[in-house]
Image (cartoon, rainbow, N blue to C red; front, top):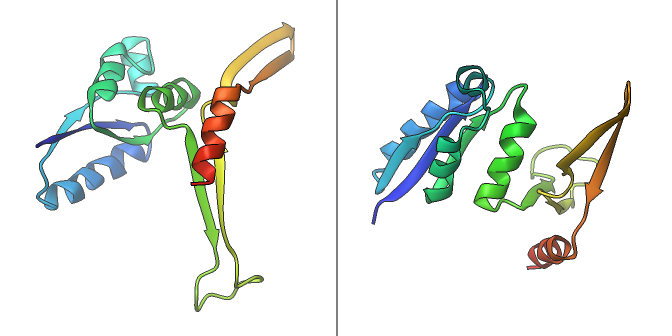
Length: 152
């Protein structure tokens, strides 16, 4: 069975590292098919949309997505991509490594943060000239989902 990987280099360093990552994956000789999509500042300039519908559909239909980086349009690219692929958990390990000086060598933590709500919801508005508000969204469903994930 071939797995389809949506490859979306995006902007900046993404255009350099994403092709290298594809090269490494291709060298593994796994049943992978790579399909390309556009997103980011370049897509915004060319199509008037930093995350064109064609790329959204490509990502939604793929088995996995390899995303590079986003520039000025990051919020308009990354947040919808997270939603499309269901990437709700931001998992960050923090540990001390043997042989490396550390203030607390026994440190072994994992931080789990909800990745699609809170201030990520992007509900901003200008109240008066020079004053903006940002609404933090917290739903019971997303809170339960991330709590369950964190304790698995």
